[in-house]
Image (cartoon, rainbow, N blue to C red; front, side):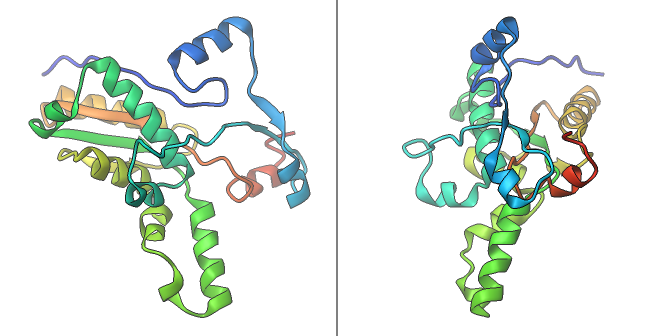
Length: 207
């Protein structure tokens, strides 16, 4: 049985865009929760949500890669970059080793709704761009990260509600412990928009 170690970490969240910012927010008791006017106008009972600024990936990724990434994919990409940097893993190492990727992701509601609205209005599926194929699948995060970083190891998405990200770390642990994989990028990502959380609001989960 192999020894398993965590060699790098990354985060992009409502209380910080990297590990240092999140650490400082925790020390200072800073909250990232806001009252979202968009949710209230959309019909939510509660407008409480974590406010996350979308990262600007121009200059980091080419246009083709950017149009494939949904909201949660952008967050995952930024966090993964930070984790790889801390671990000392560069593209040359990735190219010469079979590295896997396991991410927790529960939904990709906005791209699905946007694509459906286009088809419903235009009555023509050809008007839905190719980027929506990558954005709408629940495996969007792992599929995109594997393509961007040219990963060749295990690749699948875990969907287990709030435990999705934790389960990806646990499953990754077992893959490495058993010798099936040597290195795996593990994490969790979640879209934060008015389309994906309406049913939770109906259950009074936010108030």
